[in-house]
Image (cartoon, rainbow, N blue to C red; front, top):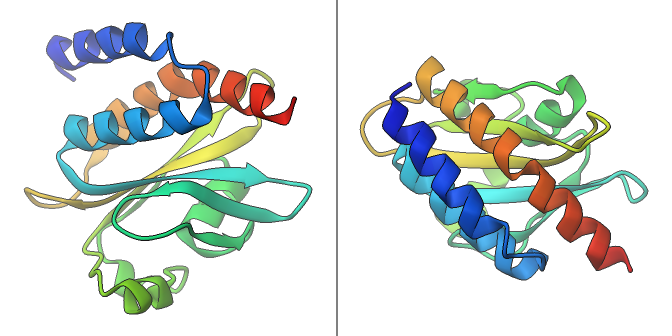
Amino acid sequence: MSLEIYKRIADFGKKLSGLDHIEEALPTIAEEAKAIVNAERCSIFIVDREGGMLWTKLSDGIGRIAIGIDSGIVGDTVLKKAVQLVNTPYEDSRFLAKIDEKSGFVTRNILAIPIFNSRQEVIGVIQLLNKYNGDFDDKDEGIMSFFANYVSGTLELALLLEKK
């Protein structure tokens, strides 16, 4: 990873520290994530353990998405507490092709990164779709894992404040 990317993420962290409402934080996080790895779309899924759901307040290009906590590649990211890098989604049995069918979007590749809270529980997933210049790789995984760690505190705080 280049030092420039780390510096960019650090600078972004300063900007993010002023945002404590989830409606402000999520679009800001998604736009930065797309820019860092040069992806077409980014959705941020929030884990609702009580409801057994994963949902988005923000889905780039389409309306809100709500799926079962054990559904799809995002659900596997939560279950395994690990990054999922899928460069052939239509060949992956976990891929929820119905979402593409409904929206008219064609997913070429996926990078799903877990976001952990201070107790090391997965509270969200950053899902990036369609890298512009080829497939997602280990470098993207490393950069986005670092990014997810960097934004986790802001997301955890925003979720706590929303519950009040």
